[in-house]
Image 1: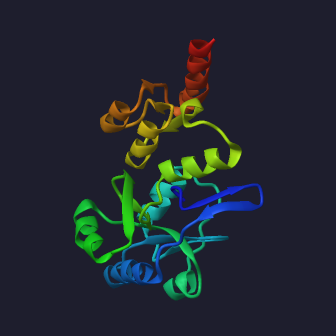
Image 2: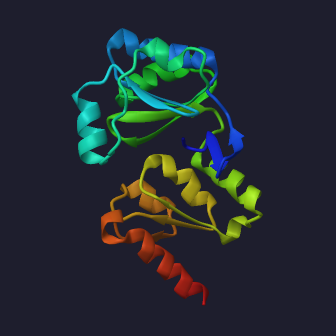
Length: 198
């Protein structure tokens, strides 16, 4: 959830939900325009108003293997803490709705949608919470990323490694570029930096 909910085993070490007013503003914007929105709570994930883009992107392109339940909007949000919203907004719609979300930030890693969390919740924040929990020094960390929402984390880590399929701005934020996930990029990136540290 882009740093908004961090856990180790059964222990939740950090969580920060989107304020209810912002949840209602953004989901209302989506409902009025029939825009799909994925809603992520503490123990569930659902999609409201799905269309063909949800199927094409999540199941065919991203290879999500577990069906995301189609849920009426009020059931998805009423009485729940919401840690991430993923509306299928283009960049113009994102710019239109963002000023009305006073306590949120957005991170785009795909042209068709954007991840929304409460302000201050980023992958960088999640990384800091995890290393604090385990007593790891920041300079001893590696971070891998391929999307725009990974840039702050790549810059923050001891060593930021961009995946080979990342866009140019993500690669520019990293210290090293490895192969794609399908070409064992993470393993190759780890092996590269283990060899450097020997």
